[in-house]
Length: 68
Image (cartoon, rainbow, N blue to C red):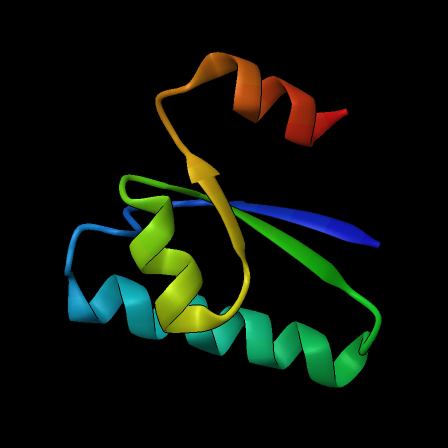
């Protein structure tokens, strides 16, 4: 199962980053095979911090491809 998450990620907001961590870990407990992609303002930072795939939230082609 692929899950796309969009929010205010990658902008150094500790609260939003904590929510992303809580969301992904909760889903992983229920569905261990879940794959995530995060739409982020700084995909490199998001991937490094959370260990999940991220693409830039303002790149319409990347977002479109991830939603297929």
